[in-house]
Image (tube, rainbow, N blue to C red; front, side, top):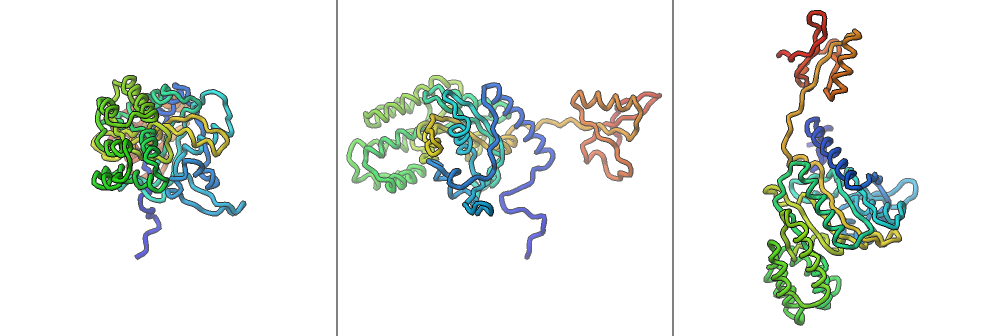
Length: 386
């Protein structure tokens, strides 16, 4: 049976007026907040050459991207699945600043498959990226900005999970794992399959063996970082990562932070801290972020970088739904006093719609709850009668 012409592909949907109004209001509020913190808006194209979109540590995104041939150049193009590599290209190749650069963006991305059963294949991605500072101060700033973004939306943040890819990479190197074995280990740790982990590390020498076995149990509040010092190998890479996590726990003690040293999502992409924000009872992360110092290398400059992104539509859906003020219906009349009143109402932020002749529907469907009438020689706003 053929689908009707108005049907959309699975996991794509239209955004109708009330939801679109909430999303747009939140977009403006968040971008304005980013601006107040010094983040400048950039708007990359939706389509680029594929090798640019998957450059460097962005290679793991290649399978999530729609690809097609450019009819002009004959090269393969990609429809972006993530805006961060594009912003990194802008920082590294176009802006070419020597100091810190703070950039932000908002626009749709498209995925071949949804990231979860409830996710859209066309998220409206909004994010902020800080380039040019390798210190933990940049990560603190980015996490503060993420928390502020969630607050603006009225989303109830249940926790922000934080991990560090440096611990995993140090232990993997200590164990002498090749790329294929490291990928297998990553999969085991992501599912926290302890029996499989025991089998995997059976022939790995100490102290890497005991360190890898400890990772699935090292999750919880900041106290887990002190336990990690006792259970993980006494090597510089582990020390440096734990020092950064401890600094975060002290600087951001007012935020609902949790730590999970086996959570390695995006480990091919990130080079340090990684974090995921959860809201309410949802099992899927609302926002993802972290440090990714190597992405710019393919564009000529491997600048230090830290940032986050999220789906603005998901964020808008989690906030409290504000009661939208109704519109005012105005008659089609060129009276000077009416023209002035309409202008004053619009200047004050009121929506005023002209009553087109011959309309037979219900003006309430268009959002009107008041109308302008001529009463005793004066134009005034009154309630719209049923």
